[in-house]
Image (tube, rainbow, N blue to C red; front, top):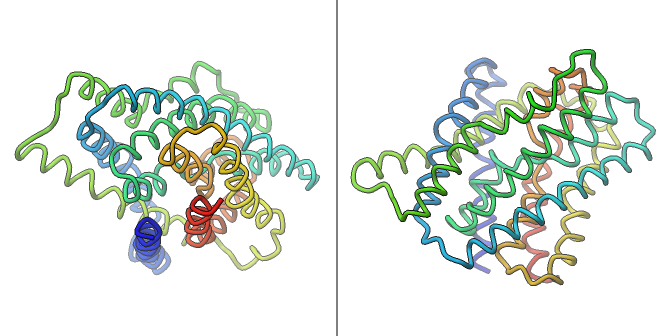
Length: 313
């Protein structure tokens, strides 16, 4: 019961922070450029601080190492499964190529950083965040290889596999590597420095939600109700697939926390990064932006539902 209250309180907190961002950008109190700048602050500064300070607070042991390996392996399979589901839905919907590519990616790649990290940390603390970061590493590997490759097929501008793999070297992965080394040697940030870095990392939740809300404010949602397949995507990605994963992962006895983190990451709303990549590679950007809007609004209800289902299935 306490865990369910935690996720409800967390969702309300995230929702209100999104609302502040939405209103700020919708009223043009904050410009689109300023909102985009906020995402850079999160990705380059506050999120790395959150990862490093949270993970180094853990006492890393053999059990966490085994769990981490399991999370990485299972995450790769889960992400591949999500992509396959997206392929099937795109074919059933007989979508044109640019829309089909975005539909596959929207089904596969969720908001596993901006929305998932704050929520999972609130529910499961630093250990849960560790497993969430590992899922995100698997997600990034798939995004910058299979995801970008599929988008490349719709556009004249091509990028090599090596160029995309270089993108795996980003502030998030560097922060994880630093945290892993510090964990291995038992190093921690203490004193005033530890307080400052932890405080900076702690702003990630609100800045992330503000950015998402501001991004949603830019979507013209007057025609969204006509996007039948976006509602299908939302139901399948955020309810049906998580239920399937709950039932399957229970059979492998991975542990409640590991299972919960993987399921919640898979159930996250569509990644906002896909809108940017769609612009870069000629995908259906409007369709993707509308999908981001629908899934994030739906997530405020589906994530507590998925969490509840994990306790009863």
